[in-house]
Length: 468
Image 1 (cartoon, rainbow, N blue to C red):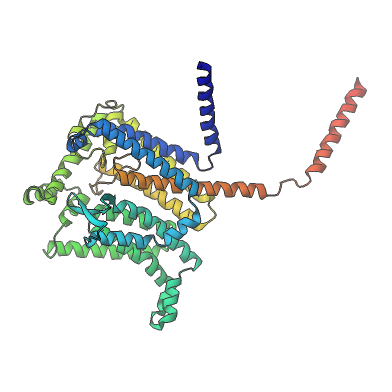
Image 2: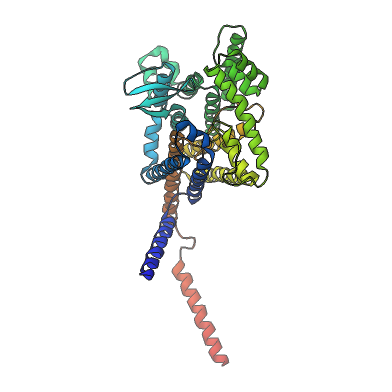
């Protein structure tokens, strides 16, 4: 009986090993995703005592819930890996800006469409409710805009913008739309500007981060640097006008919060706290902004080199969302600088593998998708770390640590991102193998060479026989 169990165990181990051997996607990216998920399960369980108290449940329930999310994330990765195709991503990318705009307009206009409703978190409209389920809109918009810009850059390079050409043909006064510059304006710059503006209505920091990712993508995609300069000039002018209007008392809202976050001005934050009505959104945000950064810095300082050990954190009892926006500081408190270095090495490995996969892709669209998604994951992770260490000029507000922080929507969206990366790496691997099989041998007259080597063997044998 014991031997039968051993045989079954060995067979199971052999099956897993054979599956890994037959995995045609990038194994390093798969391992990085699985390691991040493992870190997530341990970290979420240890960092959520305040969340458990808030929800009136125990941490075992939270861990069980996180395990389910992780399991679903693995399924999402495998589904994209198996069924994802470049052609499908290209078709999807074409309509991703329209999808992003529709979701953002629901938030901006605070629409209630029955099954789809705009919702709030901490007084800010950042979610939509679909059949009662919350979806964090910005998490989807990040990925959607990467796919859209990959399609737009590819279409611009190949001259495949059809709508602008049709409008130019049908309406002579719109003939300028068929020119390359105006095609870039219509299909690339306007979508970036509109997306950024709509996100800014709910989150200044998210708008800044997503805009930065989009600009990096078009820079990598080969857009002229002078166009980027003009975009920067327009952006700076727009920020200047908004700031001037705020100082003149013409507009109000989240401007003071945005300024204090960008400048890390604790005195400005304290002023907001003193002037705001207790219990209001501004009051709560200012209070949390003073509590969270200080707690995060204490966690990093107390963690030292080796950390306090799993479960040894004390700041998890004082920092409200340490399991989300301040997960990196929590990890350092429990595992020390060594744990932080491990995370950073994983991210640099992802960046390196993404670059390698992009080089192996034949299609320009695939290259931009891989580079864009890699920038998105690593950029958000490093932004998260910069916020945690209170880096100057970095807005002190939430960006989750991809595949580690607590949160269902973000976790599943980034699982899809890794699935897309693996599916494209799989396609690149298959193309490389196909090229290798179709390639001509370096030595075309293999038979003649082999015959010559056989003759040499016979000659050497005869010489040895004569000597004996």
